[in-house]
Length: 289
Image (cartoon, rainbow, N blue to C red; front, side, top):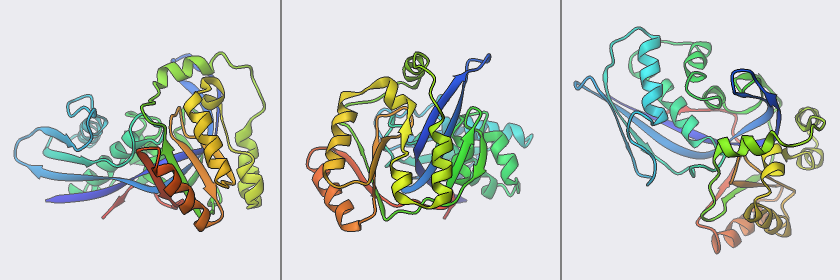
């Protein structure tokens, strides 16, 4: 049997890091938005009794450290099943180490795909319980859409859909960010009022000007990556309504209310950057094809 799952990327319209927890994690407030940039995860069952991984993207580990392996193992443990033989192939289009939750979305896709493959009929809440054990962004990736995520990112509340014509995403060449290093720099920031609260109000107002001027990311503020600052400037010159870095970086997104301008930005950036994508916001998360 073969199951294919589309695993979408996400961007953070706002991201406030509100403090370090006793368990070493950080509390955050963030508005996440799913976009139609997908990895494709294909799961095939076999008689081996092993979980194996393959991926088309150099640098992605295909061993037990891969989040898809961890997701499959957690799925079988949660359902009190012996490990079944499955091969997981990841056709990766979402850039890695970019703050776009590509790995988390792949992990979410495995949970959803195995649920369909083995007829375990897990509810959304049960899949979330598995997902939050392997990554804080995994529960969001299961549901997608426009969500307010709090705690370590696993408490999710649905928000009014973010409506815009197009989003251009680009990753600066040869710039990747370590999440652990990013959090260390964020810890040194001075406290400030919550931008996420303002973003939530903006989404309820459905005022695109208010939304695009409220885009904010604590990691962007703390890291001050020159290539990110440069890329944002280029997007604004190309008439983006609002720009921001996603997650802990280094991908940058630009919001457009004009499809023509978005396409022009996409074409122009393609001349200089190797990873550029023209996307739209979507209302769902991982989807079994």
